Length: 306
Image (cartoon, helix red, strand yellow):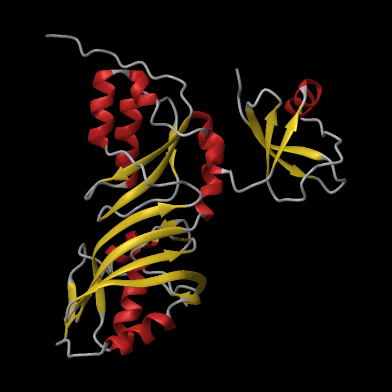
């Protein structure tokens, strides 16, 4: 009997823009990618449903310290909406609850409805979601037939564009704030048109603040891993790429030692911002700071550096 070769995991840090495949959970995708990188530590930044595809930022090593800041990111999706039917889950995973004939309606009516759902709107999160009630995810309660009253939440739809339509389907391009449920948006649009709706396809195309024009599939990563580990590592973005919309400050050797030891740094150019990127004068990203109430630079989350 041959012994299974032991895999040695390593300390590697960076952010991967994974193109998550269909029918795989976000955690499943994370674990597959982490294994290919042999990364000791990894996490994802807001899950995609198994029935959804597209951009899923994964954080390895020290980058997991910034993953929480990505939960507030704006996102962009392309979705296909089936009119005339509703689903128990709002997508193809559930059972069809009702069907009605879709009668003809004008482009003008459709555009008026889409305009109605653009801007600041409210949504009631779906039961089939990862939100928790007394520590239990709502989707687990939904599977038991339990329905919990959910509070409305305010979200923002920055852009809602029609890409294609047939007599009973819509293809939409949606740019939205955190906390937006595309399934709920599709259902609400369908209800407003008078037919009901559910989504049959969902792809996340953008997550701010990243340039998502280049993403990697698990197959891409597998091929690179088989060629050369360095090629694989080159797919990772630097940790501070998740924070480039925040102001920065550059510290000298003495100030860097101070802040790494938990001491505040006195400067007259500290940005008045909720988060501040901190760099050593060599260009190395050393952590995240904040402006304290006494107008000093205080450490918020420091990176483990060489």
